[in-house]
Image (cartoon, rainbow, N blue to C red; front, side, top):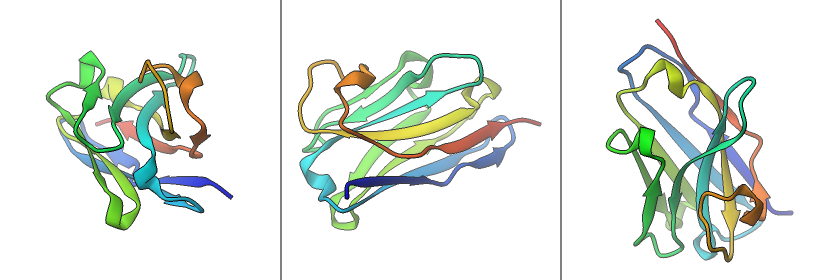
Length: 124
């Protein structure tokens, strides 16, 4: 059974950092491109970041550029999202998702498998 599990969320003060992990079980993550999405209460799910299968291409939503960094460690079957300089507006449930093929990295419909999400709360 294909499964993604996110971890690393929590409560952090504005300006702080968190590193989210997305671990795969039941399949080899190295064969998939990975996207991170987030959803805040009352809002639609939005794209955050993306890393290609090779890791050579990454994408970021404009509001997180320069603050978030996505990376992958295929030996550990895990993708990471390093989040620095966190703001209150970054508070949301963060999801990772995997896809084999797609055109628009920001389109959640193009992803085949999703994790259950991890809560990130940025508050003083």
